[in-house]
Length: 236
Image 1 (cartoon, rainbow, N blue to C red):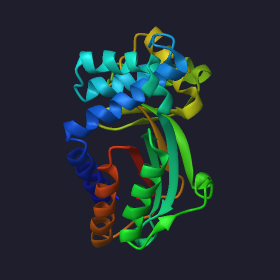
Image 2: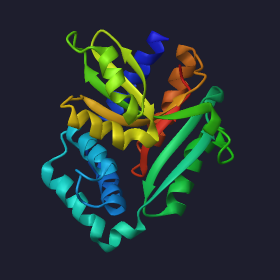
Image 3: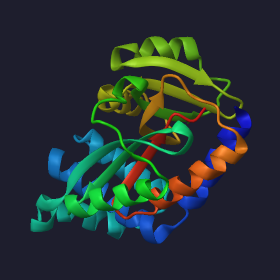
Image 4: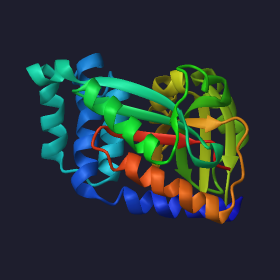
């Protein structure tokens, strides 16, 4: 499990190191968030999250501000969010989240990537029960932080689980509670390293190194697409 996780994490970091593609992807997220909930991050949790993710990638402030301004422009109306469910090599399950201004282009591109590996789309909704959508907040490990007290303080905000490692503390809640959790942490002055909305596999599957290498080739191709925001799998 550890080796597979490290393999996936290293490969993921390598892919997302391509700044020329990361900034436009993040810009789309910011624009959609601002369009849906308004341009003020203080009252728009989705926008606050998108800006936080952009800052983690060292996206310049001007880029962030311009993405927010685009929310009131004509181009913003053409942006939509799409989610594809698919089965990849060796039976790996895929959730592919996209933001696009051209549905036909995005569908055709994703289909072509899958077809090259002899794979295809799964029926919409068929993989939903295999994944749980979670809001995840990562804090730096802190021995002075009483986790029992923290759990009691955050339970009303939607906290479901706390996980501690040697270097980090992870707070899990349902994805619908992202806003309330973010607000509660801010109000309590608790800093977090990063936050994310993820799809967590309910029954992760172990794959061999050879299978992982094969799967990664497809993931590289999909995630390199300008319209793709995130890809989630059931890899252990």
